Length: 331
Ligand SMILES: C[S@@+](CC[C@H](N)C(=O)[O-])C[C@H]1O[C@@H](n2cnc3c(N)ncnc32)[C@H](O)[C@@H]1O
Image (cartoon, rainbow, N blue to C red; front, side):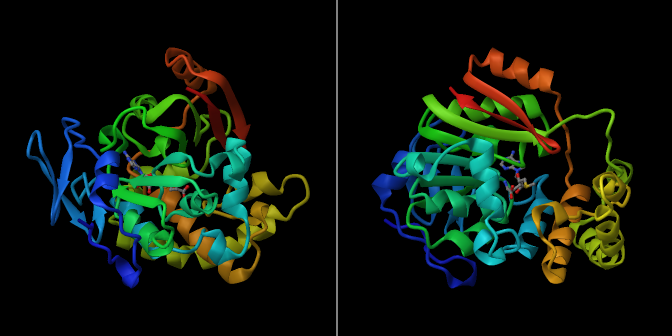
């Protein structure tokens, strides 16, 4: 048996045989074994799950992350290191996690909320067996870019109901995601069900900094209700007007970063993204990413400490990286 192999753009995904897929996937409802044909069907509870363009889908096509699906299919390549020519995603993953390529080689990695696959690419390049999950149609963008990696498996599923046996992965990576879910504590705790005891994790989350709110918070109550295509068109129009001003302000010595925050447009000067077209494209993507998500729930350090203690996680470190907390350690 093979899963359908063609994905958007005609890329071939490496074929897996039935035994391999069945050892990885199980029914998210009852954990029964899945039988594959034109769709996946649970042997125990008979629930059927479609296979869309080669990717098993365990969630309804319409869900709260529609805006993410839209943004990542518009910007399939923008943030991939192989496209930008800059090791921005690689540096962020390696700095945040503290992992080395050598320790990931040959290990199983669960990546949750993979978006267009900027981190999927980095993880696959280490030689790890990567399983990447996203609740949105972004999985198709990821497949089109990373489907050539023979050890990548992609599924469209929610962290709240993953089609994997518990405690089956060596590494867990989830960055840029949990603040955008309806119940951040539940999301955080659910992720650990899939990591084996002794497995390593790296998760980040927006830091709740009450004294330092961002002006996008004034716009979000309105913009999060605007249909994605309409909002995207507005952002595309606004960025060429606002970004040059933001760039000028951010170049002011000492106060630059604070001044630039007054303009509600994403500015990646701090990453060295200065080429005009690249800066515009990253800005459109991230300004949309600020304004469109249904949920945005930053977290306090104290709350994160409590959750890690309740889960009895070991070797935990919680570090501030700009506006994020990066939580890593061992289960
Ligand atoms: C801001 S994007 C980050 C994507 C990627 N990690 C990155 O940093 O480029 C957040 C992603 O989380 C996904 N997501 C949100 N809720 C999810 C859930 N319950 N299960 C799986 N993915 C989810 C969204 O669809 C979106 O692609």
